[in-house]
Length: 96
Image (cartoon, rainbow, N blue to C red; front, side, top):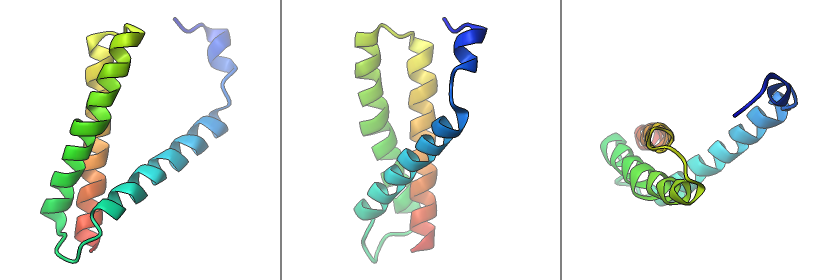
């Protein structure tokens, strides 16, 4: 339900800047969970998937139900979070 006027009112620098900060917080949090010398790329990706689907996506699904969002909204955004955290875990695990 966006209009051209409402879209023009958004501060894109602030939106992308804050998105970067919150994504960095997610990555640091996942890195703390993966802070074990035995962590490798496979375990990193697995832990990232579990965090993405098990916590982030399912939490989004619950909130979206109360907001009366569509199933497509939940699946698209839940998948985005799951993929993002899986890739973060893969990178963190490979980096170790």
